[in-house]
Length: 135
Image (cartoon, rainbow, N blue to C red; front, side, top):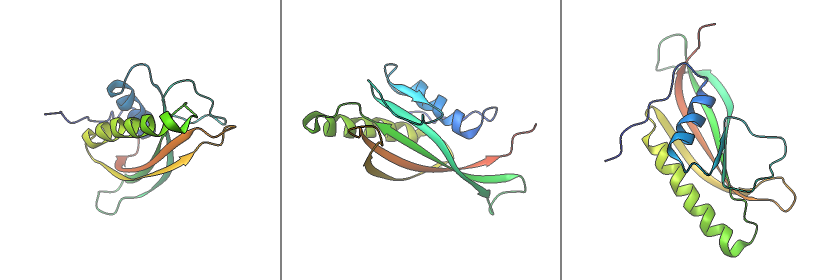
């Protein structure tokens, strides 16, 4: 049985999730805690961005609900192979996200990147309870 993955409290939630994904996905993949302005990849890529932070009513003061987006990009533009690869990559990422403690995974939405030709992609919204980092 797979063990749970605990995110590091020392890192920002976005970077902590990116590190957890990087440690649990194939080493050949590109995994980053930020999304470049223009996506042009030659291998499977996962980008994590922070979208929203707000009060978390069920937790004590100083706790927030943080919403992140996980973008999975498949570099193959040929639909004969890209669809299967993208779905396989989605399954791998969802398997890792399922193991992250205190994380709620939303629906995966199919799309394409804004790069020329548009790389096939899935975007997943995840939510977690966080505490504010001390400065």
